[in-house]
Image 1 (cartoon, rainbow, N blue to C red):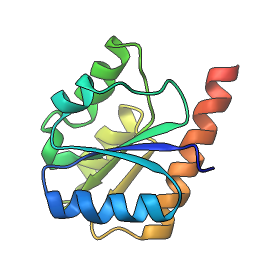
Image 2 (cartoon, rainbow, N blue to C red):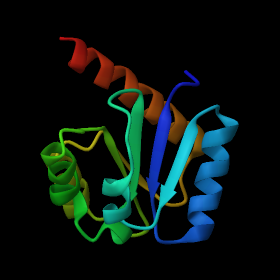
Image 3 (tube, helix red, strand yellow):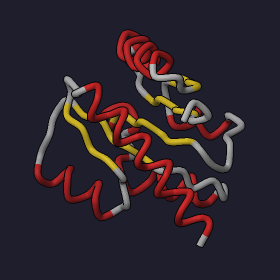
Length: 128
């Protein structure tokens, strides 16, 4: 599935670099931003894309990011990444429709599998 595009939102440039290197090695297209506002300014594909969002960087958490994307008619699957995992954060992410939630350091293969699964599920939802 080399046509997948991954948007990474993380204020930490070394994390952006590491994640983008992993995504490119898997054959994905990658765009990195340091904030949600930067992401909202980017031209995003309507399908075959997913957002990896650092919970601490977004400062909007699960509730606001999907709403911002929906308001722009560009609802892409969101996978949250965090340094500080709590039960509350996991529940909020699920409640707001996150397709994945990972604590750093991240299992590379699990993340890649989650991205591929999220894009496939998104295609199924959009087709039906």
